[in-house]
Image (cartoon, rainbow, N blue to C red; front, side, top):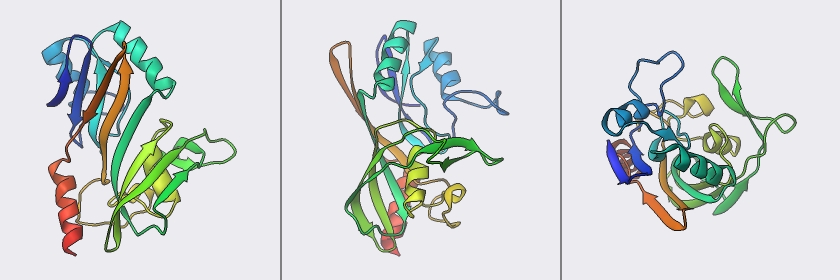
Length: 214
């Protein structure tokens, strides 16, 4: 595990893609970050979620009191989350705010879909970092925390994540999972500012090299 921060109340990791944050579903015996952390550090509580296929900064609490406080911080959106996303296509805008309402866990594929009647409000700020041929590197800053929010929003805008076939991207050998990385996380806890940044994992960095070489 790539630990970014560890103290008596918090632990932040650079999560690898392919490992679930918590055990559950049909894979209760599969490895998970919670199991791995608890084997070394005792009881932990998850504060927020990342998809199994997403890499990057993820936060856990080491006490019940810290968990209550951190959960409230996330619920009230007093946290700044930044993702890096490699998408198919080239937007004509430099910055854009997606406000599509989202309804999660739809159909046998459990997709999040745009539903302006029954969906929950969701807001993601997007900024172009680099246009690379027929691909683009975006910075995504979600103001809400809906399931698959960034993935669903970029797809709705017509620029699905590279390799995210669940949300309309073509199959590719550029990367073997949706090209999304939770790059940084900032918040204040007990009067102290915290800021964590997760370097790109190898597959994400290699994907950038591949599209730059096309």
